[in-house]
Length: 339
Image 1 (spheres, rainbow, N blue to C red):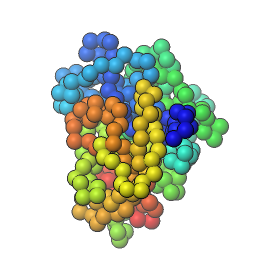
Image 2 (cartoon, one colour):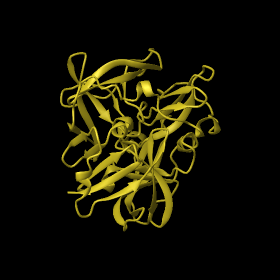
Image 3 (cartoon, one colour):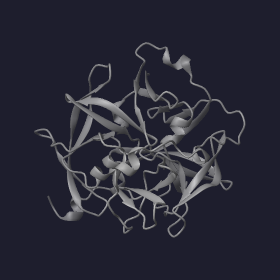
């Protein structure tokens, strides 16, 4: 296989949530640590709202009792991108900037922050939109700033993590645009056209074309988890724009699948197999899609527990070639629109 470095994959090409850690304080902050060190952030409610944030390497990790998080409630209303200060703005189309990581696309949007153009990475593995405020800053600060996305001005939270991504199209990457942005208002994602469009009300006229269909998802702590069948197995996958291909965890590769290596949160290399599979969305015929299979994905079991169990991997955007995805958070539905 060559030396360790030769087998190393770009950390940013890894998938979704990989671990759950708990901060040293008592009952104040739960953290979901990511393969790229800062992805998923969710707000949850137990008896009080608990803050969920990402962790950096070297942070204190510990076991998290899944029962503490299973009964999670809704997103913090003060942080939920419902404070539109920009007036009427319907629809709001925002171009996507694209970066290729080892053949897997990542998507970014330009924003205006502090009167300067900057960028956020579109990562629906994160349930919350936030700005990086720098290591050593508070883990979570609600409503620290407004940013302008297209014609909307919205409030965003801050998280105490460094901005480590290189600039995209000359713009510094200063945070993440999470799943809350797609669920707070009806949102149309068209990665082929490089466009993300939000609507004030659900655009029924977009759903009338032949071949259009909808699938329900489970909104679990602000993440969109889809019940699907993959190669005949009934599983559930989290929609993740940050991972490229669909990832199935806990299964072996198929005969002939080439093997690749990824690096987990603690720097341990683990294999995954690059292949295809037949995906069946509820009520729809099967479609053959790119599927990566990881027999093990370190820390993923803790993520499964944190989200209530019954989670087997990540649903990537390559499962929907030449299609647009219209999310309706009010009804927990995703419409698939042929182009």
